[in-house]
Length: 148
Image (tube, rainbow, N blue to C red):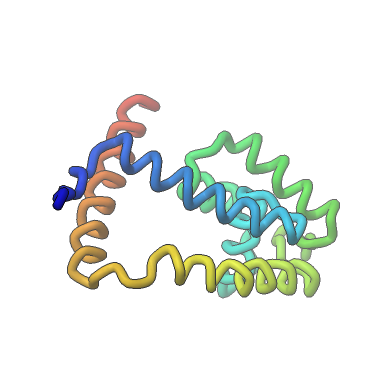
């Protein structure tokens, strides 16, 4: 009877997990007319206590995705043109359509996420969470050093 050993966490395994999960999410989002970056921007706008300014929204999405701020600005323009965000003075707020589309995509994605994450023991999730937090911290430090 063959035995299997779990692979050690490494950059390749992390990337494979990320891209597999993202591909699933992008398919769900596409059914709702959203791109991944649009969904991230909408999440920030929908969950903000106070509607953010354009610069605040760009900064928060950049902090999450590390994407080019000009690219993020173009994404905000798409959301504005599509009626999912609206300018309210110098602030951007989600429209009712933006909130509904964000919620619908989340509702469709939730059972998929549950199937992907379900059944993983809590202690494994805690260990993975610690490792991923440390990798994120170190990668952010390296990115800051490269950007200096």
